[in-house]
Image (cartoon, rainbow, N blue to C red; front, side, top):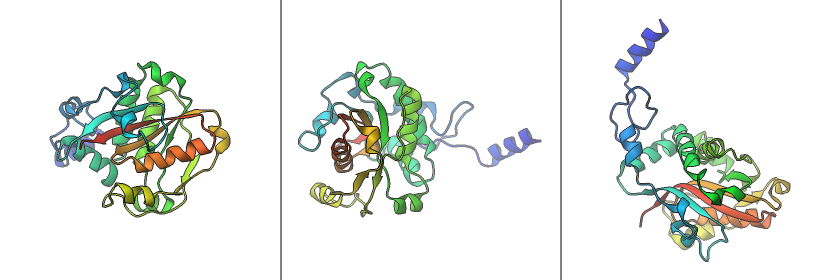
Length: 230
């Protein structure tokens, strides 16, 4: 009976890809194979100096920088990440985190990293959305890399207005003093991999990096799902 009901639901409400809206086939979850293989990956995990490390010159002192994809406007990737962030599909973050974890596991740069920390949301924002997509990405990375995830060791102490309509300098001002280390003892002398979903100006990640280093972290590296193409 359960199989019959599942089959009927699949017929009436077929699962579709969050990227291209085509119907998923057996074995696919949320993202179809065509989209998954077509998302434009970067080679940042192969280069010590790359698009991420260059992005943070003069903004924050990071050791390594990694990003999985280049995000283009009106792309299937943009649609998938929009669903992850705003359409209650945070599992997309976990799937991409596991995938990236498997890729990063092959690079020696990852060997010195002690723990993973996700950029937090303010409790008010978390309540509005119901989840933090970066937590899911961080969990996927943690499982893929077998590196512990430090949950709750940094918090967002100030509710800030949306960054999407702000320019570069406004974003930096908007985030000054917005984060605080809750468990600094966990961070002392550690190399932390700080993760977020999408890198635009980098103001949020820079602010979090300053907070982690001030709390005693020895090094901070950064990983994101995607970087917005200029």
